[in-house]
Length: 409
Image (cartoon, rainbow, N blue to C red; front, top):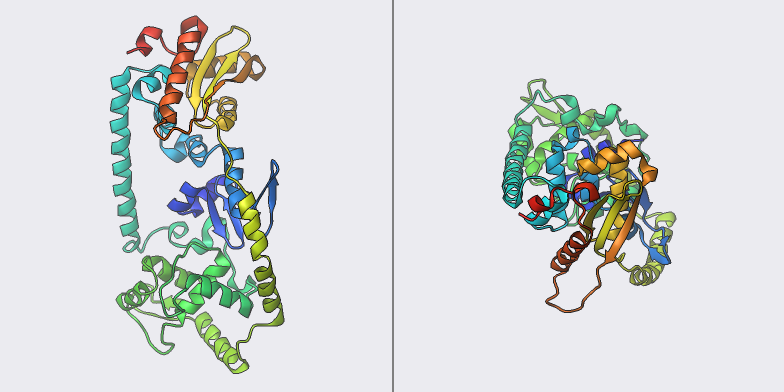
């Protein structure tokens, strides 16, 4: 079983932002590895969901959001300080600088503005660094195996002979990833290993069995297949479909690719008609289409409610107050406290001192929905939070927020 960090390492940037990977016919949560299977209907609170939609429900129910999950990762993974984590959490909620200062009890509103600029600079630097590493991949022939060889990542080697590939599998995969035909470009290379192998054996057919190629010639050929031609080249080598001289001066088709070419010629003599099983499955899928559309109509988006909540110490009456656009995620506050990583250090210290049973998490007010097109929910939520701050005054001996005078700056 992979750890959550392994799923994150495997996923692309877009998949991490979305929260799940597609490994046909399954969807895999990058936060915990939870899987949903296509074709299965998942019930939740009286609503029926198809696999992809239910994966989004799972992420919201279990992790709150991908943003919250990533923010709770160890600083050795994110590279963020505790202060930066706290700021990002507040910014994600749409808080203004004065509100952030009041919630975290640090500096002044101008200090928060300065932190915003620092984080934007960190983002710019990260983009440049990522671009440098991507460009380096095409030149660094001495890169460690776990970086350049996806076939052997996570500490084990994938043996291609273990794949059970039918002609139906090949046709389905190639039609999906080569919509313009197998002589055309590849749409994506983010797929499960079995599908990668099918796609790579097809790409290998573009090479002449009796010819040797320079690296430049290999790259030119693969550029027509996929933008990241270096990744494709490395996978072809890892799977034994391409072989090369140690110095990379020459490339040629490997024995495995020649074996597949022979098998293709055999298949060509036998014909390529679909078997009865494939036709039956295709027919069943067509018959279920209307039913799936019906279920999609039933599967409404999970409703979220914004509001203000408090974490109250029943031993001394002190409270921590904050707001959120989704009250369903406030259990994430309890999780952070249990892990010792809450963003409010005063609250975390007393949680550690008094224990979990001394605290309750309560919703103070749920923001009412307004259909007015000019209604600003974030502004309304900020005003709601301010009212509760004025009412409860959670400062000093009464709460876990900074000095009232400092918070008003």
